[in-house]
Length: 288
Image (cartoon, rainbow, N blue to C red):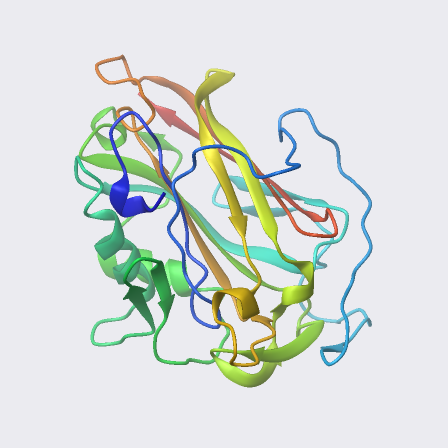
């Protein structure tokens, strides 16, 4: 179910795989096949399955943090499950208008990723947000730049109005290939050869929920992300240059209209790839 079919009482997860990838906006109506509950599952060991003709550099890079280390950014904490081939960056939690029917979500998402006059990311009818004009990296500051342009503030404390229709609280972050130079290189819509999150580790399955005061507040999150060559077949693409990820919820979409919004919340998710490696995500915030 696409985001554009979003209805009240059902949260929508918006996962944008853009620029060097293809974007999709899907409603979170349940977990993917074989998914585990991020609140109870443990880290699983996994091996990399990266095949020719991709080029892989298995050496440790001297600059940048290790891909197997936890990631913390603006109160968002992500813990690796095994050693995934991609790493999160540039995470933010903020509030903005999404409109009572969700119709403002797409314009805001595009504005976050596109500087004025640019079309680096575009809307694809019947699918979602996809690559626009090819652009080179680095991609790990696109959200910071977008929040600054739009005047949004990354924070942990929100008013009831900021978590109630027409507003919502967002979690965004960028997935990028691991390593300072990229451990795997190949073709994406952004370039003929460069660092990618390889198709060989897809599908990536997201599962999780929004919690309030330690109990599930909105369980309706779940998504399977397909390989690039399945999304855009016949063009020789071998992976994603980067994966902008957007998640948003509020009192009404969470199925609690009219309730007291005050409390301690936490977005809690897992992203696992075909090798069972991935990231466990925790993004706490407070509504007062």
